[in-house]
Length: 311
Image (cartoon, rainbow, N blue to C red):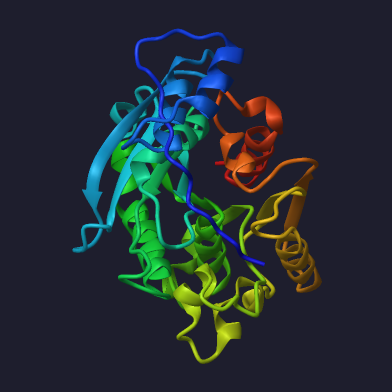
Protein backbone atom coordinates (compact mmCIF):
# COMPACT_ATOMS: atom_id res chain seq x y z
CA UNK A 1 0.00 0.00 0.00
CA UNK A 2 1.09 3.52 -0.71
CA UNK A 3 -0.74 6.45 0.81
CA UNK A 4 1.97 9.08 0.81
CA UNK A 5 0.93 12.42 2.25
CA UNK A 6 2.85 15.72 2.16
CA UNK A 7 4.25 17.09 5.40
CA UNK A 8 2.26 19.92 6.91
CA UNK A 9 4.07 23.26 7.34
CA UNK A 10 5.62 24.06 10.69
CA UNK A 11 8.58 26.12 11.74
CA UNK A 12 10.45 27.42 14.76
CA UNK A 13 11.55 30.70 16.26
CA UNK A 14 15.20 31.41 15.69
CA UNK A 15 17.58 32.46 18.42
CA UNK A 16 16.17 30.30 21.22
CA UNK A 17 18.07 27.72 23.21
CA UNK A 18 15.68 25.02 24.27
CA UNK A 19 15.81 22.01 26.54
CA UNK A 20 15.45 18.59 24.91
CA UNK A 21 11.78 18.59 25.91
CA UNK A 22 11.44 22.09 24.52
CA UNK A 23 13.00 21.02 21.24
CA UNK A 24 10.49 18.22 20.80
CA UNK A 25 7.56 20.46 21.67
CA UNK A 26 8.80 23.12 19.25
CA UNK A 27 9.14 20.58 16.47
CA UNK A 28 5.52 19.61 16.85
CA UNK A 29 3.80 22.88 17.64
CA UNK A 30 5.24 25.96 15.99
CA UNK A 31 3.34 26.40 12.71
CA UNK A 32 4.31 29.42 10.64
CA UNK A 33 3.31 30.02 7.02
CA UNK A 34 5.97 29.50 4.38
CA UNK A 35 8.16 27.04 6.28
CA UNK A 36 8.16 23.25 6.31
CA UNK A 37 8.44 20.84 9.16
CA UNK A 38 11.90 19.94 7.88
CA UNK A 39 12.97 23.61 7.92
CA UNK A 40 12.16 23.51 11.61
CA UNK A 41 13.93 20.21 12.11
CA UNK A 42 17.15 21.48 10.54
CA UNK A 43 17.09 24.43 12.90
CA UNK A 44 16.40 22.26 15.93
CA UNK A 45 19.06 19.82 14.86
CA UNK A 46 21.64 22.61 14.70
CA UNK A 47 21.05 23.70 18.31
CA UNK A 48 20.84 20.20 19.77
CA UNK A 49 24.11 18.99 21.33
CA UNK A 50 25.90 15.95 19.98
CA UNK A 51 27.78 14.69 16.91
CA UNK A 52 31.12 15.83 15.55
CA UNK A 53 31.67 18.96 13.49
CA UNK A 54 30.37 18.80 9.92
CA UNK A 55 30.26 21.21 7.02
CA UNK A 56 28.63 21.72 3.66
CA UNK A 57 31.39 21.03 1.15
CA UNK A 58 29.48 22.08 -1.98
CA UNK A 59 26.03 23.39 -2.82
CA UNK A 60 23.90 24.06 -5.90
CA UNK A 61 26.07 21.84 -8.09
CA UNK A 62 24.32 20.82 -11.31
CA UNK A 63 24.63 17.30 -12.69
CA UNK A 64 22.18 17.96 -15.55
CA UNK A 65 20.43 20.75 -17.41
CA UNK A 66 17.10 20.74 -15.58
CA UNK A 67 16.76 23.03 -12.52
CA UNK A 68 15.91 19.95 -10.45
CA UNK A 69 19.16 18.21 -11.40
CA UNK A 70 21.31 19.74 -8.68
CA UNK A 71 22.97 18.50 -5.51
CA UNK A 72 24.67 19.48 -2.25
CA UNK A 73 27.59 17.73 -0.55
CA UNK A 74 28.33 17.42 3.18
CA UNK A 75 31.19 15.90 5.12
CA UNK A 76 33.17 15.96 8.35
CA UNK A 77 34.78 19.32 8.94
CA UNK A 78 37.90 19.63 6.78
CA UNK A 79 37.07 16.67 4.55
CA UNK A 80 37.11 18.73 1.37
CA UNK A 81 40.48 20.35 1.92
CA UNK A 82 42.06 17.10 3.06
CA UNK A 83 40.70 15.09 0.16
CA UNK A 84 41.23 17.55 -2.68
CA UNK A 85 43.58 16.10 -5.25
CA UNK A 86 44.46 13.10 -3.13
CA UNK A 87 42.15 10.58 -4.77
CA UNK A 88 39.71 10.78 -1.87
CA UNK A 89 39.74 9.02 1.47
CA UNK A 90 36.27 8.82 3.05
CA UNK A 91 33.40 6.48 2.15
CA UNK A 92 30.53 8.13 0.30
CA UNK A 93 26.74 7.98 0.67
CA UNK A 94 24.36 9.33 -1.99
CA UNK A 95 21.15 10.08 -0.08
CA UNK A 96 17.77 10.33 -1.83
CA UNK A 97 14.89 11.89 0.11
CA UNK A 98 11.24 10.91 -0.15
CA UNK A 99 8.07 12.77 -1.04
CA UNK A 100 5.83 10.51 -3.16
CA UNK A 101 8.07 11.20 -6.18
CA UNK A 102 6.16 14.51 -6.26
CA UNK A 103 7.77 16.76 -3.64
CA UNK A 104 10.94 17.46 -1.70
CA UNK A 105 14.08 19.53 -1.88
CA UNK A 106 17.64 18.72 -0.94
CA UNK A 107 18.04 21.72 1.38
CA UNK A 108 15.53 20.24 3.83
CA UNK A 109 17.64 17.14 4.44
CA UNK A 110 20.73 18.74 5.89
CA UNK A 111 19.92 17.02 9.21
CA UNK A 112 20.19 13.58 7.57
CA UNK A 113 23.33 14.45 5.62
CA UNK A 114 25.05 15.91 8.68
CA UNK A 115 24.14 12.86 10.77
CA UNK A 116 25.94 10.60 8.31
CA UNK A 117 28.79 13.09 7.84
CA UNK A 118 29.36 13.11 11.61
CA UNK A 119 30.00 9.36 11.34
CA UNK A 120 32.77 9.82 8.79
CA UNK A 121 31.00 9.82 5.42
CA UNK A 122 30.98 12.30 2.57
CA UNK A 123 27.27 12.68 1.76
CA UNK A 124 25.73 13.73 -1.55
CA UNK A 125 22.08 14.88 -1.50
CA UNK A 126 20.61 15.31 -4.99
CA UNK A 127 17.29 16.70 -6.11
CA UNK A 128 15.49 14.89 -8.92
CA UNK A 129 12.68 15.62 -11.37
CA UNK A 130 9.20 15.27 -9.89
CA UNK A 131 5.65 14.25 -10.71
CA UNK A 132 3.50 15.66 -12.32
CA UNK A 133 5.92 17.49 -14.62
CA UNK A 134 7.85 14.23 -15.03
CA UNK A 135 7.02 10.60 -14.38
CA UNK A 136 8.93 7.33 -14.18
CA UNK A 137 11.70 6.79 -15.17
CA UNK A 138 12.88 10.43 -14.90
CA UNK A 139 13.61 10.31 -11.16
CA UNK A 140 15.54 7.04 -11.46
CA UNK A 141 17.53 8.42 -14.39
CA UNK A 142 18.40 11.46 -12.26
CA UNK A 143 19.51 9.18 -9.44
CA UNK A 144 21.85 7.39 -11.84
CA UNK A 145 23.21 10.70 -13.11
CA UNK A 146 23.88 11.83 -9.53
CA UNK A 147 25.80 8.62 -8.81
CA UNK A 148 27.89 9.09 -11.96
CA UNK A 149 28.61 12.71 -10.97
CA UNK A 150 29.68 11.46 -7.56
CA UNK A 151 32.06 8.88 -8.99
CA UNK A 152 33.66 11.48 -11.25
CA UNK A 153 33.91 14.39 -8.81
CA UNK A 154 33.84 13.24 -5.21
CA UNK A 155 37.61 12.72 -4.82
CA UNK A 156 38.07 16.47 -4.93
CA UNK A 157 35.75 16.77 -1.92
CA UNK A 158 37.44 14.14 0.22
CA UNK A 159 35.40 11.13 -0.86
CA UNK A 160 36.53 7.80 -2.23
CA UNK A 161 34.90 7.06 -5.63
CA UNK A 162 35.62 3.38 -5.05
CA UNK A 163 33.42 3.30 -1.92
CA UNK A 164 29.99 4.63 -2.87
CA UNK A 165 26.70 3.56 -1.26
CA UNK A 166 23.17 4.71 -1.99
CA UNK A 167 20.59 5.38 0.71
CA UNK A 168 17.08 6.75 0.72
CA UNK A 169 13.80 7.25 2.53
CA UNK A 170 10.40 6.31 1.09
CA UNK A 171 10.35 7.32 -2.60
CA UNK A 172 14.08 7.96 -2.23
CA UNK A 173 14.56 4.40 -0.99
CA UNK A 174 12.79 3.26 -4.16
CA UNK A 175 15.35 5.17 -6.24
CA UNK A 176 18.25 3.78 -4.23
CA UNK A 177 17.06 0.18 -4.60
CA UNK A 178 16.32 0.49 -8.30
CA UNK A 179 19.86 1.77 -8.87
CA UNK A 180 21.34 -1.00 -6.74
CA UNK A 181 19.40 -3.84 -8.37
CA UNK A 182 18.24 -2.91 -11.88
CA UNK A 183 21.48 -2.65 -13.83
CA UNK A 184 20.02 -0.90 -16.86
CA UNK A 185 20.18 2.49 -15.12
CA UNK A 186 23.93 2.59 -14.54
CA UNK A 187 24.88 0.04 -17.19
CA UNK A 188 28.63 -0.53 -17.20
CA UNK A 189 28.84 1.67 -14.08
CA UNK A 190 26.54 -0.55 -11.99
CA UNK A 191 29.53 -1.70 -9.96
CA UNK A 192 29.96 1.82 -8.58
CA UNK A 193 27.35 1.01 -5.91
CA UNK A 194 28.92 -1.07 -3.16
CA UNK A 195 25.97 -1.07 -0.73
CA UNK A 196 22.41 0.22 -0.40
CA UNK A 197 20.21 1.24 2.54
CA UNK A 198 16.47 1.66 2.22
CA UNK A 199 14.29 3.34 4.85
CA UNK A 200 10.54 2.68 4.66
CA UNK A 201 10.75 2.18 0.92
CA UNK A 202 8.15 0.87 -1.54
CA UNK A 203 9.68 -2.14 -3.28
CA UNK A 204 6.71 -4.42 -3.95
CA UNK A 205 3.61 -2.25 -4.26
CA UNK A 206 1.35 -3.60 -6.99
CA UNK A 207 -1.43 -2.96 -7.79
CA UNK A 208 -1.31 0.83 -7.89
CA UNK A 209 -4.07 2.59 -5.97
CA UNK A 210 -6.17 4.49 -8.57
CA UNK A 211 -5.15 8.17 -8.68
CA UNK A 212 -2.70 7.61 -5.83
CA UNK A 213 0.94 8.64 -5.70
CA UNK A 214 2.20 5.44 -7.35
CA UNK A 215 -0.46 5.56 -10.06
CA UNK A 216 0.53 9.12 -10.94
CA UNK A 217 4.22 8.21 -11.08
CA UNK A 218 4.00 4.78 -12.76
CA UNK A 219 0.45 4.30 -14.07
CA UNK A 220 1.47 4.99 -17.67
CA UNK A 221 3.88 2.02 -17.76
CA UNK A 222 2.39 -0.98 -19.60
CA UNK A 223 4.53 -3.57 -17.80
CA UNK A 224 3.85 -2.57 -14.20
CA UNK A 225 6.13 -5.30 -12.83
CA UNK A 226 9.09 -3.61 -14.52
CA UNK A 227 8.65 -0.67 -12.11
CA UNK A 228 9.06 -2.82 -8.99
CA UNK A 229 12.46 -3.13 -7.27
CA UNK A 230 11.60 -6.67 -6.20
CA UNK A 231 11.54 -7.68 -9.87
CA UNK A 232 15.33 -7.22 -9.97
CA UNK A 233 16.23 -9.13 -6.80
CA UNK A 234 18.79 -11.36 -8.45
CA UNK A 235 22.17 -12.84 -7.58
CA UNK A 236 25.27 -10.70 -7.23
CA UNK A 237 23.50 -7.54 -6.12
CA UNK A 238 25.18 -5.05 -3.79
CA UNK A 239 24.55 -5.80 -0.08
CA UNK A 240 21.30 -4.25 1.12
CA UNK A 241 20.03 -3.08 4.51
CA UNK A 242 16.29 -2.46 4.80
CA UNK A 243 15.06 -0.37 7.75
CA UNK A 244 11.34 -0.41 8.46
CA UNK A 245 8.98 0.84 11.14
CA UNK A 246 6.29 -1.66 12.11
CA UNK A 247 3.79 1.16 12.72
CA UNK A 248 4.19 2.42 9.13
CA UNK A 249 0.73 2.70 7.56
CA UNK A 250 1.96 4.61 4.51
CA UNK A 251 4.37 2.04 3.06
CA UNK A 252 3.54 -1.30 4.64
CA UNK A 253 6.33 -3.44 6.16
CA UNK A 254 5.71 -6.25 3.68
CA UNK A 255 7.69 -4.20 1.16
CA UNK A 256 10.90 -4.64 3.16
CA UNK A 257 10.15 -8.20 4.20
CA UNK A 258 9.39 -9.34 0.65
CA UNK A 259 12.45 -7.69 -0.86
CA UNK A 260 14.78 -9.07 1.81
CA UNK A 261 13.37 -12.56 1.27
CA UNK A 262 13.71 -12.31 -2.52
CA UNK A 263 17.31 -11.12 -2.35
CA UNK A 264 18.25 -13.82 0.14
CA UNK A 265 16.60 -16.49 -2.00
CA UNK A 266 18.61 -15.27 -4.99
CA UNK A 267 21.87 -15.55 -3.06
CA UNK A 268 22.43 -11.81 -2.50
CA UNK A 269 23.07 -10.27 0.91
CA UNK A 270 20.09 -8.59 2.56
CA UNK A 271 19.59 -7.51 6.16
CA UNK A 272 16.39 -6.15 7.65
CA UNK A 273 15.81 -4.13 10.82
CA UNK A 274 12.26 -3.69 12.11
CA UNK A 275 11.37 -1.04 14.70
CA UNK A 276 8.34 -1.39 16.96
CA UNK A 277 6.11 1.66 17.14
CA UNK A 278 7.96 3.61 14.45
CA UNK A 279 5.99 5.17 11.61
CA UNK A 280 6.76 6.33 8.11
CA UNK A 281 8.04 9.81 8.94
CA UNK A 282 9.49 8.82 12.31
CA UNK A 283 12.11 6.61 10.72
CA UNK A 284 13.77 9.49 8.88
CA UNK A 285 13.28 11.91 11.79
CA UNK A 286 15.25 9.42 13.90
CA UNK A 287 18.38 10.42 11.99
CA UNK A 288 18.16 13.87 13.58
CA UNK A 289 19.59 14.66 16.99
CA UNK A 290 16.28 15.77 18.57
CA UNK A 291 14.53 12.49 17.62
CA UNK A 292 17.40 10.02 17.62
CA UNK A 293 16.18 8.31 20.76
CA UNK A 294 13.11 6.98 18.94
CA UNK A 295 15.07 4.14 17.31
CA UNK A 296 18.71 3.24 16.52
CA UNK A 297 18.23 4.03 12.82
CA UNK A 298 21.46 6.01 12.46
CA UNK A 299 23.50 3.48 14.44
CA UNK A 300 22.16 0.56 12.40
CA UNK A 301 22.72 2.31 9.06
CA UNK A 302 26.19 3.49 10.08
CA UNK A 303 27.32 0.05 11.24
CA UNK A 304 26.16 -1.54 7.99
CA UNK A 305 27.76 1.12 5.78
CA UNK A 306 31.04 1.13 7.65
CA UNK A 307 31.28 -2.65 7.35
CA UNK A 308 30.47 -2.64 3.64
CA UNK A 309 32.57 0.39 2.69
CA UNK A 310 35.80 -0.51 4.45
CA UNK A 311 38.90 0.64 2.56
